[in-house]
Length: 205
Image (cartoon, rainbow, N blue to C red):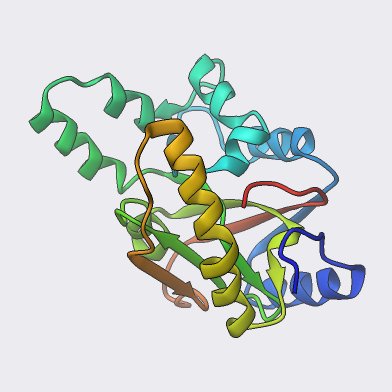
């Protein structure tokens, strides 16, 4: 199957129903500008925010908006980058794991509502798996796949080669598929809010 084609209406409807059944909030928007507008509404002023490295967030203008400082959020990413002392920077990274909000994307979203997030370093995975109480995922609908087999195929055959090329161009380093998080649901005892902003355009890999 091709992995850069937007989901058809049947697949999208099935996925939205599955995500909703898992008690996730689902917002459907037409483009990246609308996705950014939803984020501005979702995240309150004064909240601490951390984001993963995400082409999707770059494309919708979130990264530039975060850098602008016009949002009133406590931007952990900026604090970490600004700190020159390695020990203090490491401490800030630890503190960022408890950010009020974590924003990113996924590498594959299955029609049953399960999703995959892969990582080389693993730095974003604690936020998603446990620590951040509010997760916001911006997902172009081309990332929707029927099931686990297609999700892994998408990751290994499509995402990783594109991400490797992206990393070489941006940082002159390679990427590696070191860790994969399979997220099937949240514990009913966990006080967490999970929001998917599904965008009707191709975003990210």
